[in-house]
Amino acid sequence: MWAMRISMSHMRAKLVVFGGLGFLLSVALTGGSNGAAAVAAKNVGEVVLAVAVPLLIVAVVSGLYLLPAIVAWRRGVPNLGSIAVINVLLGWTLIGWTVALAMAARTTVVLPVALPARRNDDEPVF
Image 1: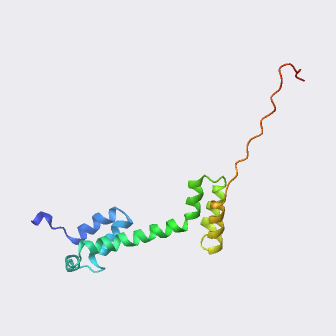
Image 2: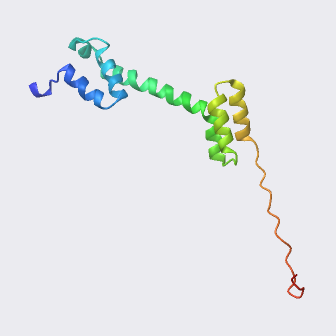
Image 3: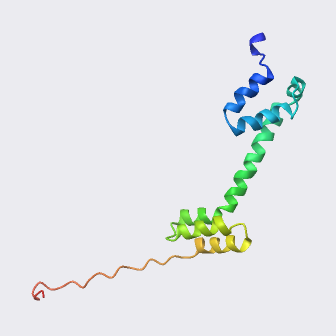
C-alpha cells in the first residue's frame, strides 16, 4: 500500500514533464491548493470534465471558425489558398467568414480543353 502513495510534489513533477496538459491536470487535481485533502475530495469524473470539456469546446469552436477552409479543401476548390487566407485573417468578422464560406461553396465550372483539330495525313505540313 505504501508503494501506491505518491507525494503531491512528485506527481506534479511528472505531470509537468508532459507539457501544458500536465499542468492543467495538476491544477485540476489540486483545485489550486497544496493540500492532499483537495486531491482526495476531487472525483476522477470531475477531473476528466475539467480537462475534456474545455478541450472539446476549443476543438468545436476552431472547427466552426475554419469551416470555410475545410469545405474548400473537401470540395477541391482551385483557390483554396485564397479562401484559407481570408478565413484565417478576416474570419473573426462575420463578413470575412461569410465571404470565405461563399467562395468555398460556389460552383466551379471545369472548362474542357480545346484539342487541336485533327489533321489529315494527305495535307502537307508547313
